[in-house]
Amino acid sequence: MPENPIVRALAERCRRDGSGALLTWYRPETGARTELSLRTFANWVDKTANLLETLDVTTEVAGPLNSDHPGHWMSLVWPLAAWQRGCSFTTEVGPASELVVVGPDSPAQHRPALTIACSLHPLGLGLQGLPSGVLDYTAEALAEPDAHYATPVHLDDPAWTDADRQLSHAATGQVQPVTGRVLVRPTTAWATLAAALLGPLLGGGSAVVVEGPVAEDALARLAAAERVTDPMA
Image 1 (tube, helix red, strand yellow):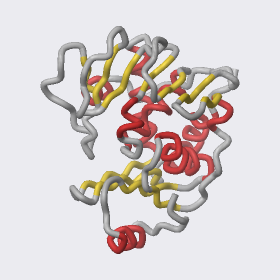
Image 2 (cartoon, helix red, strand yellow):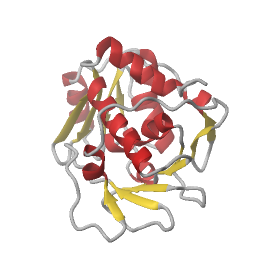
Image 3 (cartoon, one colour):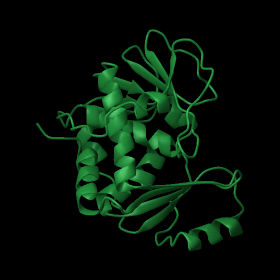
């Protein structure tokens, strides 16, 4: 059985140029900036996929995190980790959801599913004082091994579901490739994932994701400093 095409693309890019840039994330209003190489991003995906295995998640991961914070690098890790584990990823919590991934602003437990809260800290620091039954993503993921081998999938099985679409594993690889360095302003969960991660992985490019309010002249200076070559997505 084959692997998810995006999972395969990440592994192939890591083998060719693991130290190369993949994702640079900004939050100008706070001065936050995080740069992730291919290898660093893949390491977070591996650890998260191993966490899914540890938690015995085998079918569906629900990520309202991706609807609430579509451009944060932690949000972008989760769909790839789910696909690497052989699971589907949905932004909508439903009866089939085995794990629910939320942000720091809504860390309530989603019974009967497991719940993990992400800090959204630029450097991945964890959360303190979470409600009973809610796990801290950083603490749990960092305890996992660094390597995870992709689980084979049926390419026709669902890989992504949101309010507007359901996409198979095969369809996740049918995104316009990005060959250069693209500036991304987050919009919807799927559009942001496709522009910031899937397109660059498929085309050999990279992305600069800018979250939150920023003046146009400041955005232009940032794009120039980051050597953006592709039009804003």
